[in-house]
Image 1: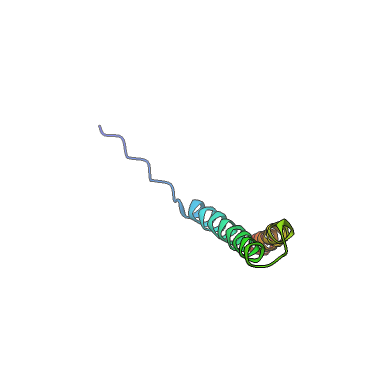
Image 2 (image 1 turned 90 degrees about the vertical axis):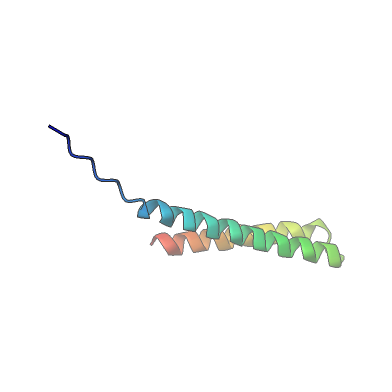
Length: 69
């Protein structure tokens, strides 16, 4: 007698986490890139890159909290 095959588990939850991680990475990359460009083409120095990184982290955190609640 053959055993029934187990049903495959849904990976929809995993795709949601993957999408969230991709969005957070894109936000951080965007803000760091803007900070780098600001640093490169103005006299702001490394402060612009640091500011871009901080704004990126804050935006990513805000997006994460808004998404999970």
